[in-house]
Image (cartoon, rainbow, N blue to C red; front, side, top):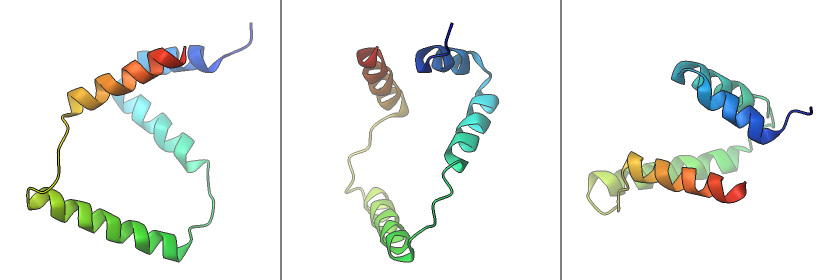
Length: 79
């Protein structure tokens, strides 16, 4: 039987959290595309602006629990 993304996802969700994170890091590191310095600088500026907004109370924050549930719902919709 061919391995599907769904079956792999199910197996990954059964792994301990530290192994899930190591796998995610590994998968993300597969893309070794060179970084454009202008894009990197733009992201650095965006990150600083968002951190400032959080610190100054100008950002609408969402709890991790709510984000996790929304992600799970989207994954259910993809099946």
